Amino acid sequence: MSRLVTFDATNTLIRLRYSPGDYYAAVAGRHGLVVSAPEADRSFRHHFRTLLAEEPNFGRGLAGGWRRWWTTLVGRVLTDASAAPPSSETAGAVADRLLADYAGVECWRTAEGAVPLLERLAARDIRLGVVSNFDPRLHRLLERFELSQYFDFVIASYEHPFCKPDQRIFELARRSAGADRCTHVGDSVRLDYEAARAAGWEAVLVGSVPPEAGVDPAHLCPRLADLEKYLKF
Image (cartoon, rainbow, N blue to C red; front, side, top):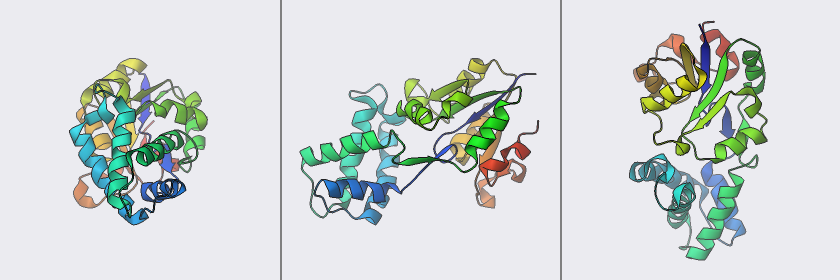
C-alpha cells in the first residue's frame, strides 16, 4: 500500500518571525508613517478574514490577482492603524516592500523540528507533499529554506480553482502521489483536520485546541518534531 503524508505550510512547516502588526509598522515607519503595531495586528486579522470572504483564494481569477489582493489588504491595514491616512503612493510603496519581504527569510522561519522530521520521513518509503492555501510565493519560500527537496509535489491553492477546505484539493494531492493511504498534517481544525477527514484521509492536528473543538486526542500532536508517533506506520 502506497503512503502519502502532506503538510500545510503556515504555522506547520514555516512560521512568522514577527506578528504582522509589528512588521507592517516597522516597514511603514521606514516610509514616514506612524503606525500602531497592536492596531495593525487587529486590523490585519479582521481584513484578512473579510477579504478572503470577498475574494476567495487570494483573488484568483480576478484582475491583478494575488498581488492586488495583498496590496488591498495592506492599504486597509494602513488606513486603520496609521496616525494619518497614507497617500496612495506611500501605501503602494509599503505594499511592494511587504510583498517582497514576505517571499523570503526576512519574515519567516522553519518550524522547530521540521527539517529533522522531514529527513526522517524522506528516508521511509512514503511520498511527501505540501497542500496549503497560499499564493505562488510558497514555492520560493520552500526553496529559500531548502525544504523543497523533501517533497514530491507542492500544491499552492492559488494555482488551482479550489482551496481548502474543498475536498478537490485533497483529491488532487492523492492523484499526484498515486497513493492509497493519505494523511494530512496542519494547524487548522476546519481547513486541515476536518477537511482532510471529510475527504477520506487520516489527519493530524499540530498544536493545541480546546476540547470543544472536537479533535480526537489521538490525532493531536503538540509538537511537529513528535509527528511520527501519530502517523501510525
